Length: 390
Ligand SMILES: Cc1cc2nc3c(=O)[nH]c(=O)nc-3n(C[C@H](O)[C@H](O)[C@H](O)COP(=O)(O)OP(=O)(O)OC[C@H]3O[C@@H](n4cnc5c(N)ncnc54)[C@H](O)[C@@H]3O)c2cc1C
Image (cartoon, rainbow, N blue to C red; front, side, top):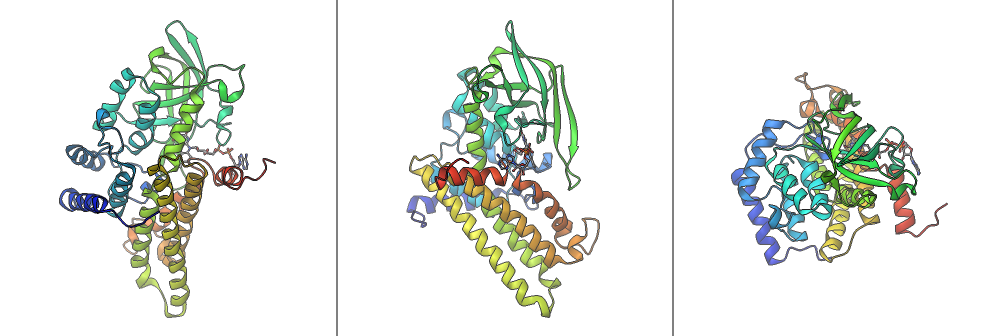
């Protein structure tokens, strides 16, 4: 690919930069959690930013204009995301705007698009993704939550786990088994669930960074009207893979990681000693080069999309490399932060307001969320390198 901006791309990049300079309020930059997409979400801050984006028509610039987006080309979406990440702008309602809305646009009928997309754009409806279950994470197709037809409704029973944001959500995109007798990929359907419906119970799970970002969700005879079936009956697997494809591609992580690294470099500088300065410089240089590699990998995915190709194992390479790099950056930050780096936000001596130790713990999840590293490696081995299955 040609890495240089065309004249039109450069003009658009300038437009985004000017917008950020003029409109992004001071002090609303995203916390590191957002790099991982599991931000605890500071509602008021995010909502204020969402309203500013809405005024400019840039809440969901990738969506077609007819659904409230800006119909940006792939390259302009890439530039938009790149510039927002450079500016460390928050990503309000990220799951709904980045994954669920686009899935509804592909698989939903006109009524569903009308019902759900405007709430996502305005930030009035908050969504969660109900895919994983206690026995079904990597082997998602083995999920056991059941949806049984009863008159004009489906009746849902079962349990989901690790559901990010379920405690704040109004809607869930749920996968449930509708045909237990078919092969496992062919008996699943996707539904839109009203999280306030009778029979839905959300229980908090606190992660190892002591943040409540995900939950267990239980369904006890929850009635879902047929109109809320998303896509065709028993073809929910294809709906799910659409969502996962959106989840694994994207530039935001790579650029955000580089911005985070720059912050680590500055914050740990006063803590470095003469004797270890050279080793620290080498380690930081390695990390910086790796962020450049990560950006190149994201460029590759965008460039394929711009040519009408569908990235597959390329998106897995992106996800694998970016998530493992995030952990290496957290590790480098802890090492260079030394004992100070272990201090939390309450200490006046903590570099980066105590975010180093929190980042170290939070990033553990990055190689699990959205598909583990082992699963990504298998995809790369089989589809990318053409290695045999066993
Ligand atoms: C921060 C975070 C947020 C999340 N948010 C959501 C969410 O909002 N919604 C949602 O539905 N889910 C969510 N998840 C769940 C996530 O998708 C699963 O954790 C992930 O798919 C792994 O599944 P599992 O936890 O069941 O692990 P398992 O699948 O049980 O895997 C356990 C271990 O075995 C390995 N393994 C499994 N199968 C294979 C294989 N075939 N070959 C080699 N190794 C294998 C795995 O790599 C892993 O190391 C989230 C997870 C995290 C960490």
